[in-house]
Every structure is written in structure tokens, then in C-alpha cells.
Image 1: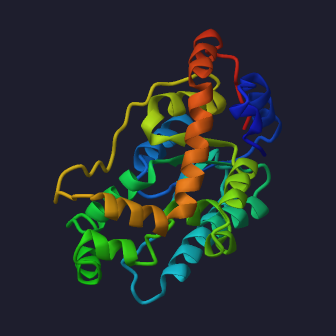
Image 2 (image 1 turned 45 degrees about the horizontal axis):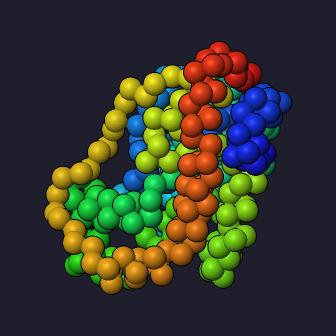
Image 3 (image 1 turned 180 degrees about the vertical axis):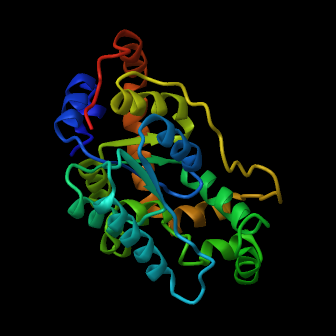
Length: 274
């Protein structure tokens, strides 16, 4: 499982690698990265689909236990299902992705990234809005954006879903980038959502499909003024997120034109099994 071929522009070879490792398409949904929309699309394009739902309102158990219970329930369902799941998604952490890979053969993890500052601002607004079940608790802990940046939970939020925690604690940015490149079958960008979606669906469905859904968009609400000082602090607090995003964005930018041309020339050339 490697993104090297994709980011070298070897699209046919990358598609062939995906065909040879046919199994569950597992969307690792990083919060506030257009993931709700993509999850809905997967249910339509690659059924049977399963949403790995983590109920954060169950305050009688700690957060890690809630994550673990949701993944355990999914694996039990997957083992007993009459038909194997072709796709699944959820706000799972890296360790859950690895547990699913160990339990189910041929899992192909994919994810979507977003510029860290835009993602943090969106996450801040969402967590403080009434649509978030724990918004009152968040507001009490973080009365403003500066205080939100100091909370350990939201820091390096993307990386927590994509790489081992020791890499994050040690600030191993280069190792984190290499790990993402090695462990994921596909990584897209919200800023290039249309192209990312069409590339991914070409792998999954055999031909590129235009996105049709846009869910859980939270662009209303309180204004957030991000001063240069706050942006610098956000970058410092989220250095691993920034490194991963910058690495993927640079690589994606280098292949974007070739990818568009290839999709236009090979609309049905990527049929993946499973």
C-alpha cells in the first residue's frame, strides 16, 4: 500500500496496485474535511456500506472507550455480515485503522485532508455551535479561539487519525509524512475536492463520478479573526498536521493537470475488484 505511484503520476500502475489488494475501502474521516459528504457518496457508489458511528454523548465512558466500542461493533458486524462490506467510514483514529486492517484482509484506507488553519477554524466554530451536542462544555473550556488552540484534544487532529501517537508526541514530521505515504491507498484534498473525488471514484467504481452531496456544511456562526500571531500559534501547536498537509498538497499540485487529462482519456480504465 503506497501513494508513491499516484504522486509520481503513474495512474495506471496505482490503479493496478489497488486491484491487486482488493478489500474494504475504509474512509478515515478526519473531522471538518468534507467527510460527511464523502461518506454519503461511498454508501451510494460502493455498497454494502457501514458507518462506524462513535456516540460522544455516552459520557459514562471515556472517549477512547467510545471509539474502541464502535470499532469492535463494526468488526463483529463485518465478520457476520451476509455480504462483505465494500466500504465503511468513521471518525476512527490511527490505531483503529490498524485494528481493522489486521482483522479484515485487503483493507484500502483512504482519507481527505484540509488546510490545517481552515480546518481548525471550522472545527472551532462547529464545536461551539448548537449542532454539536457538547458545545456548552467546549465553550466553558475554550471561551475564545486562543484558548481553543491550547486544548490538547484538537491539536494535530488530522495526524491523530493518520499516524501513530508516538510520532505526534515527538514531533516527527518527516516520519509522519512518510507513514501516510506508505499506509494509505489514497489521500485527497478538500481544496481539490472535485478532482480528489473523481480520482477516488475511478479507483472504486471503475470510472470517475462527479460529487453530488454536500453535508454538514458549517460556514455560518460566529466570526473568527485569525491574526498573524494566532496563525503562528496554530502552526506551532499543529506542526505535524501542517507537515502532512503541505507534503500532500505539494505532491497533488504537481500531478493535478496530468490527473485531469488521464481521467478524461481513461474514463473506464480503472475498474477495481471487490
